[in-house]
Length: 362
Image (cartoon, rainbow, N blue to C red; front, side):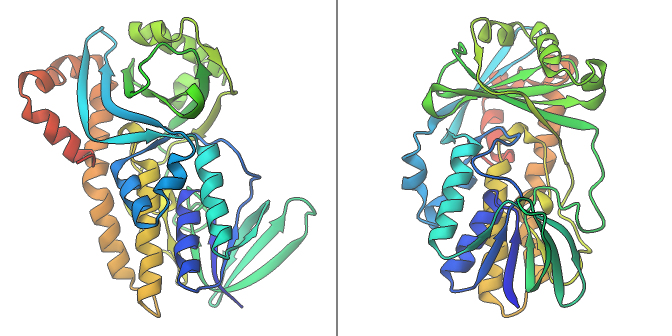
């Protein structure tokens, strides 16, 4: 029998597997994609992420990848106004291709057994049995495990599955974007918002949250949708006048839900499988890593899981960020609300510090 099976080798899965392996637990990590690969993501490491990486002794290795150091947030409204917020601690811009591959290599160095490319097709029973398919040979087999950490980014393989939000994330990398290399730029448009930031190697990542209906209006043509988005925000259009696109657009549904209860015995949800918030705060990777530390640390401290303690820690981690990021998204994506609310950032300076705290930056 396998001791612990971790499903998903993103930041949540790799960090959880790494912590358990360092504690002497035999861990099998299942990942369906070949690495390196892209994911829809803002590609920012927040204070929460960097603090966790420091505890794991990984900060220097990530720094060696050459991340962009981001000191400020600039909000550009559709009507032309802009607002600037200093970050209490710099964020790092790093691509998921580079970051996820580094974490996977660290997990393997710690002794984690990696099965890749292998897809998890079902989880059943008590004891837990994971049915997996090798995507190279199409062979199907079953793994019996004492425990499962589900870190697949959506958790749809167990009921109740999160409901769809009707929003999609889109993302691509560009060169020659006319923006400062140390500023995270947020853009408000008609009913949607997005971000732009530098990552390693002089590249810029742009990612937007878009309603599915606007994507459907362009029959899934993201180039046409992005051209329309640029027309709605003058500053965004200027930034991309001479930009060269390096990667194809990728898209994925955006989840949004509070920490989930009612998961079958023997399974712990981690990262976006456990809870998901608006991506406007750039906290996605940080929350994934921090929740992995909570779940794996709990398994190291208790012979059997303390479900109540994990859930309480998850609530502490997500609650305020979930509400504040949702409010921020609504304000930035509404031309009317942005005209009324955002000027307060300049008129009442303490609101800047409060905003950073609510978004989890302080």
